[in-house]
Image (cartoon, rainbow, N blue to C red; front, top):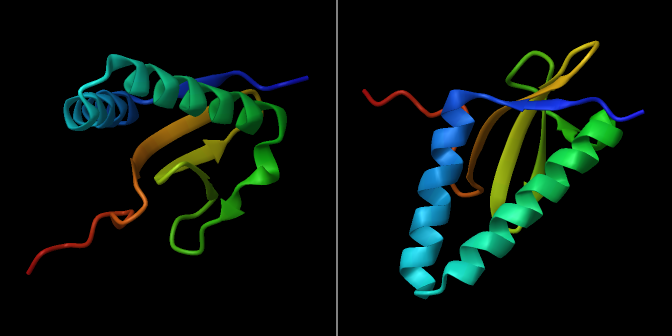
Length: 99
């Protein structure tokens, strides 16, 4: 049975920004809708196969998968999956500290 997934506020804000940027760049709302649907499909896959993502060495217990050019970072718990963030694959996670 698939585990339910929960999207953190941070991930929700990131997704909204990504979708806004994609729609602005392409001038087509449909492109944003398709990307959103692909993200949800990936979240559902994570719920069904929580170990499908690559285990991250820098974060205890977090995994990552990709949807198009976007990195989905998540954490598995006994009863659910927490989607921690969704960012472009060229971005670092966690963000590097500027000095």
